[in-house]
Amino acid sequence: MNDLGMHVVHVPFRVGWDPADVYAVLQDLVPTRPGPDGAPVACDTYENATLHCRVEADAGTFPLTLEMKRIDPGQMNTWSLRAVGMTGGVAYSTRYPKSLRVLRVDGGRQSWDERELGSQSAFRR
Image (cartoon, rainbow, N blue to C red):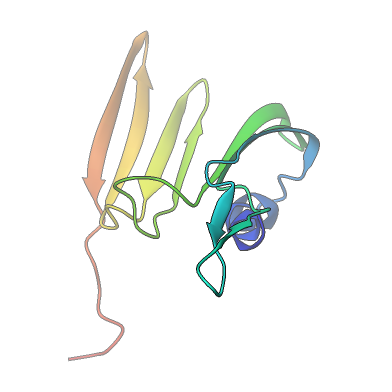
């Protein structure tokens, strides 16, 4: 996935989630593209990839799914992170940069809450 592959692993690698096993599902949606003269030439780049991984970390072993998409209708330069466990979780997307979704588990009830993060200028008034 060339440059897209590195972007998707920034956060997992930063927090120490190094995959022990990786299984990839690749999509080759555009097999040819116009060359310099306009004639079709073979394209050796996959457009979308989903990596199913097993991570061994201090907290135990858990599954990790990473998705990279060059072709994703409705998205423009969007990245998201979703972490869900047995007692709660969080979800964030740059599509809605001022919102954080939080999964709460109370007894047997599960609910997603949306929290407004607001924004703060980097410059003083």
